[in-house]
Structure formats: C-alpha cells, structure tokens
Amino acid sequence: MPNERTTEDIVREHLKRTATEGQQVDEQTSGLPRIKQALAAASKAGAGAGKPEFIITFPTEAPDLVIVVECKADVRKHESSDRSKPAEYAVDGVLHYSRHLASYYDVIALAVSGTTNDQLQVSTFRQLKGSPQPELLQSPHGTPTSLIPVRDYIDLLTFDPAVKARTEAELIAFSRDLHNYMRDYAKLSESEKPLVVSGILLALRDDAFSRTWSRLKARHLATELYAAIERVAIDADIPEKKRVTMLAPYQFVKTHPELTRQNSQGETPLNRLIGDIDRHVRPFLQAYHDVDVIGQFYGEFLRYTGGDKKGLGIVLTPRHLTELFVRIANVSPLDTVVDTCAGTGGFLISAMMEMDRRAGADMERRIEIRRRQLVGVEQQPHMFALAASNMILRGDGKANLYQASCFDADVVALLKNSEGNHRRPTIGLINPPFSQKGEGLHELNFVLQLLDILAPGGTAVVVLPMSCAIEPHPVKKTLLERHTLVAQMSLPNDLFHPVGVITCAMVFKAHEPHQYSPQPTWFGYWKDDGFVKTKDRGRIDLNGKWSATADSWVAAYHAKLVQPGLSIARKVDHKDEWCAEAYMETDYSTISRSDFEASLRNYAIFRLVHGGPESADHEGQD
Image (tube, rainbow, N blue to C red; front, side, top):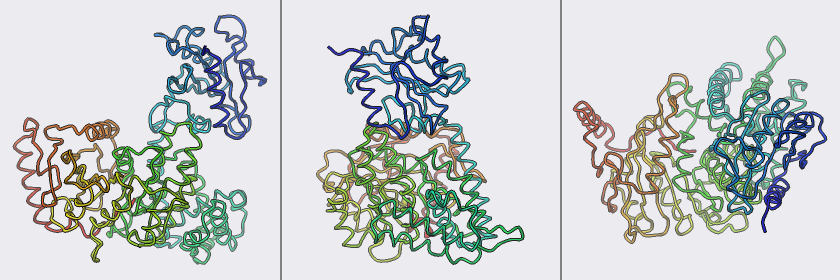
C-alpha cells in the first residue's frame, strides 16, 4: 500500500539523480547550527523541533540558501483552503517551516504529494531572508509545477520578471556605450565588434584567464585572450575541423593594433573591454539562459550603425518571435530542431529552453538535447563563430553546427542521414536572407530546401516577406506539390524596425502534398503584438501586453479558431494569395471611417512602393 514513504522515495531519487556539486541532503534534522536554531521551536504540532522530510543546503556555493521539502501521500492533502493546517497538508507544512527558516536563510519550499510520478502534485515557493511571507517561485516560463533539477532551484532563487526586464534594459544601455567605445577607441569594424564580445565571454570561462587577465602585461593580453578562447573550444569537444573554422574569425584579436594601444594611464582598450564585459555582461548571461546575449549585442550594434541599417550584413529575429515560433511548432523534448540560416543561433536557443522546460527533471534527456537534437547551418564565417560561441556559452549543440550553405549537397546529406551525430530533423525554424539576387536564392527556395531536409511529417515555421504570400512564383507550385501549407500569419508591420520590411509567418508540414490535406489553410491576422517603438531601446513590450497576446495567438493557431477580424480558414493552391488579408472577414463594429480610409491609403502606397520585394536591405537570420 503506497504511503508517505513512497512519496519520499520519489523525492529522494530526484535529489540524487539531479544533484549539483556540493549539495548536502539531510532528512528531518540538520547538523548546521543556524538550521537547528531556526527549527528548534518549529514543530507542526506546536511544541518541540520541526522535522521536515528533506533539508538541502549548499555550504560552498550558496551558504545562505536552504531548500525544504514536505511530503504527503494523498494528493487530497496537498493544500488546505487557508493553509492553516501544517500537520495535515503538504503546502501548509512546508510554508510553516519556511517562515521559521527565513529568519536565517533564503528559502525555497517544496510541497509534494502523490505516490506516482504521473499523479505527483508539486507546489514551489520562495521566501527571501527576512521576508514576512513566501511567494510562488517564478521562472521565465511561469511557476514550476513539477520537480525540477536542483541546479535550477539555485538559479531561480533570484529570478524576478521585473528585475529581469530592468536588467535587460540596463544591458541594452550598456551595449550602446560599448558600441561607442569600440568605435572611438578600439577602432573595430562592425563585424569585429560582436566577435570581441563573444570572444571575451568565452575567454572568461577559462579559469586561468579569468583569474589572471587583469594582471597580464598589455603586450601579452591579446595573445592570452585568444589562447583562452582556443582552450574553451577544445574543452567543449568541438570536432577539430569545426574548431578551426570557428576560431579563424577570432584571429584578428592577436594583431589588432588599437586593442593593445596603451593610454596615458597605461590602460588598453582590450583591458577596458574585458573588465566592462566581465562586470556587466557575464552575470546576466549566467542568470538568464533564455536570452541570446550575442544576438542581442549584434542587434543593438546594428541599431547604432549610422545610416546603413544593414551595416552588419543581417537582421536578427526578435526573441519574442523565436519563442513564438517554438510554441507554434509545438517543440517537444523528443524533437530534433534545425535552423538552416542559423545566424547567432536565436531559434536554437529558444528551442533548447522550451525542450528543457518540457523535459523537466529528466537530466539524461537534457544532455541528449544538447548533444544530438539542435542542428544549425550558417554560411558566413563570422556568424558561424558567433553561433558556435553562443552554443558553448550554454553548453549545447555546438558539435552539430555546420559552416556551409544550406544548399550544399554534402551538408544536406548529413542533415538527412547523420544518425551518428543527430537524427533527421523533425522541426525547422528559419528566417532566410531576404531579396537575394542569385538564381535559386529566392526566400521560397530556402523554405523548399528546409522542408526537403525535414523528416516526413515534420513541421517548418518560417518568417518571410509579405511578397512571398501575395505574388506569384514558380517555387510555390513545387512547394505545394511536395508539402502542405498549414497556416499563414501576417505579422506586425514594424516587427524588424528600423529595417522597413513587412513580413509574415508560414507553417508547413513536410512531405505531405498540399492537395491531399483534409484541412483548409488557416490564416491569422497578427498585426498587433503590443510592442511600441522607443528612441533608445528600439521596439519593446513597454506595457506588458506580449505574454497574453502570445498565449491567445498560440491557442488560436492550434485550435484553428475562426474569428472575424482575426483569422479565417480557406482552401488555397499555388495560384492564390497566401495571406489573411485576402480572405478575412472584417469585424466592422471595431472600424471607424478614418480607419477604413487610412487602410485604403496605406494599401495603395504599399502596392505602389512595394510592387516587387518589400525591401532590398533585409537579410534574415536568427
């Protein structure tokens, strides 16, 4: 007969399986004086010492953190209506202990009930030292509702959405100052700036360099920086050929004359840059794994690149869009995800975070995700270096990056059949280069190539210029002969601000001809994501609308809801327009005469100005 011991066994096994280095697990009592004192009068019965099921501490890494766990076998005893019965209910009991421990520690409190993994209920709370009341623990994906790896509890202790938003704003402001310093004093080119940032972040992962860089003589600092980057790449087990390719763009740091030029105080630009990045960027990267920091800097540097908004050669996909695409594709921990236009790896990072979230405490699956389930192709050498560094900084997928064109036959063969490194991809996410002039380089050619690479039944979610949706093109016929157009969503007009290109998203199912699909294509009108343009920070979720908007869009897509003014379903073929605006029923109750006249003017201007491709200055990447 299952009882509370069964629940404890589940928790005990979890703590053992997901253990982090230096953790100490005690049951009911602890030898640490502060815990003894905190629990001395914490009995749930009202007299005597409190005895939680588990007490987890981290004497070396986090001496002021304690995780306390209370278990109940019966899920009906998970939580009382007013949390006033600590002896009977798991939540009530663990919060009782948390209040006592919070006089001495930061506390994470876990209430666990149930006797099988399938029925387990978990509530997770945080109570910082000195705080009068506990609160639900937050993560970038909401409140954890299952047991998660011990390491994640440590990382999430200080997570706060408001703090993250403020810290990210500070990082963006720092990137502006960094850009100006690199331009004025280090004399770096636009492509060199993000390489220096990523190279320094990599080098700071090397213990020897991290400890000694501030004491190195100016003439040695650049060569030691490169040597540290090389050591980190070797430690990451990147195959030698890929490692050589990745390291090549960093060679310039050893010989760039301005990086090691001393000022009157004896400081070099490289010394200043390492110190600033160590203070301002590395802590952010360690705290917030879901942010493509390298891509963030690349995008911000682009904003400050004078009049040529394409000075760096590409336009990166906004993070909220990469996260949205991952949800549209319904990425699971068992999928293999490919981005054949990888850029800095933004889509792969968002996919990894979602796969980790859904893998929960399955550490073996998390390792497998990083080792075999994230695949990228990037043609530009410096972008490949940035993507590889991004992956190393997160301990994922770096061995499955290919520096090549996605049209290279050898790479395509590897992507389809590389059982030794990874399975054939089941999910494809891309933002292809826009407005390429070469034969076979139309945006739809990139989509066709991606779909041909995917496993049968795989899903591709792509961002494209609106011209691909409304203008005829021979590739459209080929696409639908081989694959199914599942959906198209028209995206906000200024999504890629300051680059002026109007875009849409399309969803395809691979290797299932469109004519045999029993379902019509679903069209969504996703023009308002709640973001606003600001002078210094670009396009941001200033009013906090995005989370609810994303939830409603994802729910509408997966349910294929038809809503006047927002979505519609239609049978289409290659000769039709693939856009919501062509078929959507308008909700006239929300439209004024001025709205109608403005829409007509805007459409007339759009057709006049954008008779061909919307923009000749957008090259999409992640």
